Length: 55
Image (cartoon, rainbow, N blue to C red):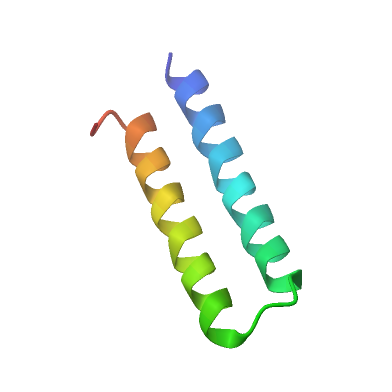
């Protein structure tokens, strides 16, 4: 059970990093890019909290 949660957390973390990298590659202005990064980070934190059984 613990290894399953650990794998889920690791995969979620890697997906967050990948999406943040892809957001950097998009041709957006600075403000829009920053908003997109904040949204991705918030969704990632909520997803990680789900794996830690907070939600």
